[in-house]
Amino acid sequence: MTTAEIITIGTELLLGETVDTNTRFIARTLRDYGVDIYRTLTIGDNHARIVETIRDALQRADIIITTGGLGPTVDDPTRQAVAAAVNVELEYHEELWAQVTARLARYGRTPGENQRRQAYVPKGARILENPVGTAPAFIVETPESAIICLPGVPREMETLLLQSVLPYLQGRFGLHEVIKVRVLHIGGVGESWVDERIGDLELFSNPTVGLAAHSGIIDLRIAAKAESEAKALQMIHEVEQTARDRLGDAIYGADEEKLEQVALDAIQKRGWKIASVEVGTRGTLAARLGKLESLILAGTDVQEQITRPLEQVAREMCEKTGADVAVAISVMGNDTSTDVEIFLLTPEAPREHRLQYGGHPLNAPRWACNMALDILRRLAG
Image (cartoon, rainbow, N blue to C red; front, side, top):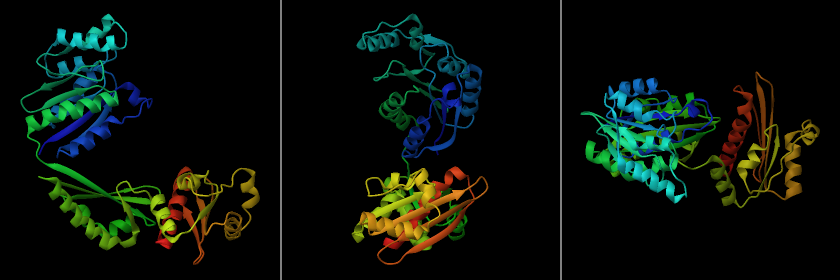
């Protein structure tokens, strides 16, 4: 079993000024090659902390991948920190300086003396030429592990990971397994409801099964590790079928399928047109429905309409727009509780739901829209 840890380096990440997308890309790439990710973390541009973090990771992981801190400025300390972590000195490579110079020349620029720092790497490191940037990457090998240092710029990191790092890892660690993941989406029920029905599956070690709760949606993740993609997918299929048998139509989709698209597909199969009316949702539903005909009541209009029954508003909406289906949502509350009313008018039968949302008020519009869409897709399906 090959294990890895991912370390993203950059004070801008800790301050929330930059969003870390590198960890997700690296983790998803490595899982496809059967590598188990044991830990991911972010640290600032601090030499001592980087040294400590890398030494700590070397005690556990076969593969340590860092991103960031390879630029030419004083606050790019990764090179020095990695060298210190494995007790070697930095050494200058003339060919790296030539690469930096040539890369900058393409932009009509002459490198400053500070950029010469990028020509230094830990002694004995394996150099990875960066074909899309000026920061050279490198690999420091120990008898048991490999420390792979990549640029923090996402496109540069992705290019080097796919073109240079993966072939190296396959050769060094003989990666011959794959990890595949399937995510089932569940609507209209709570996490405990799901857990009661598939809790025994969550105890599996391979495939592993886990739950993640969102606003009115539960994700059920099935991950399998095997010697081939076909075997992993077969393992997932067996567990997925069990989950589907137990959860029934609470499952509305998988992987990249969105609840709104599933609901709209069901509506379109019926040949229905839809309109929406929203009070207190900031137009969340209409935004998700996209190009469908809709009306958002906002501002003073909401205050004028809020005392009227949603059923009346929904019927007037159908008459006004010629829609076959009207979805009316009202979200009204305070810091402690939120009242949600959902009224669906369809050619078959009206449906009214009065619900209480106990989460953060700012999440109430998304929760209410997810509940409404789930009811809609069940009615039309």
